[in-house]
Image (cartoon, rainbow, N blue to C red; front, side):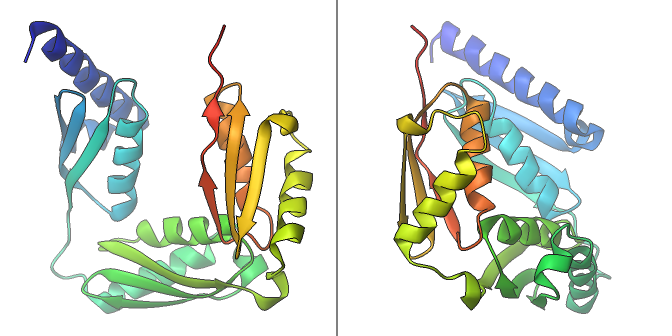
Length: 224
């Protein structure tokens, strides 16, 4: 490994560590970072799955990172049972910002693995439900068996039209975007000006009722 490459890796490690510390002090204390040729490994201990996933997203957002291997361990109190975890998950789901829209969701827990089931209206509600479940103490992983409400299952052409209508409300260059749908899965491609616009398009599509999943292939325009 060249001296220059090692310096770049050290800078990446430093930037990830700083972002972790900024997001939450305990990340900086309990999560360690190693980078070799742009490949980052995270290891250490956090309190729940949500923190583990968030640490990975932070690392992936740092410039120069090619790949992230998440070896973070979730600290699990041996006194916490699957029943305790289920109660925590259901409590969190009731606090979801979409609880009134989708009503009660169900959850099964086996050895810390949570399976969610019930009906949702769009991808955003599924993502939020998974996020809420992941924040419960003792959760190791979350499996979604959430399904779209039948009333929101529509044909692909109509779904694309709804997504286009939603995106048109934002300051995005619609002629430069290509939107397709296949059985509730929407694929976005084309070009936007920056990462913020890419994320905005993604979130807008996810919020459309009838969208089960969004695949985002949008590229950011190179500045001339």
